[in-house]
Image (cartoon, rainbow, N blue to C red; front, side, top):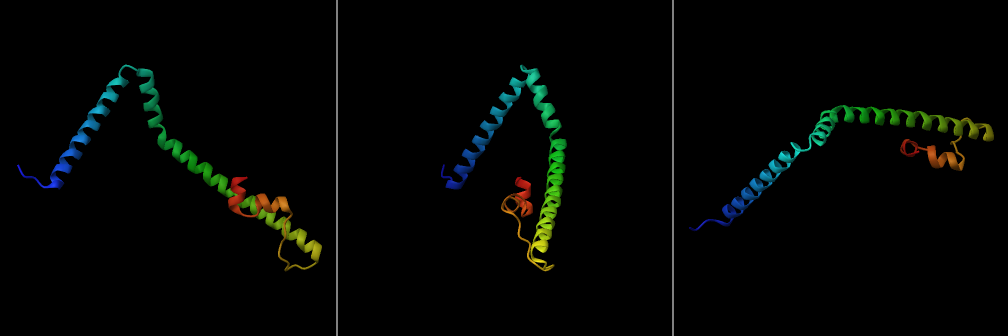
Length: 111
């Protein structure tokens, strides 16, 4: 029988997919014997959505506090510069450690 090369490769891919599917069925049969492991995995899968929402909430809180700390440091540096130069329009200059850890939101989040 004379078949095009594409049909032969599709047939091979279909066979590989079936083999993978049967292998996954074997793994699910093993779960019957390990009921504690099965219940643990099912519990983790059931709480996955809640875990993601909790992590998102923590990330938002982390971001908000980073913004607050960055604003506080920049205001402090601005006051230091104004007091040192008596110029209300002076560009704020922060001490080295404050500038290293709290000069922008990304650095504040990493701190």
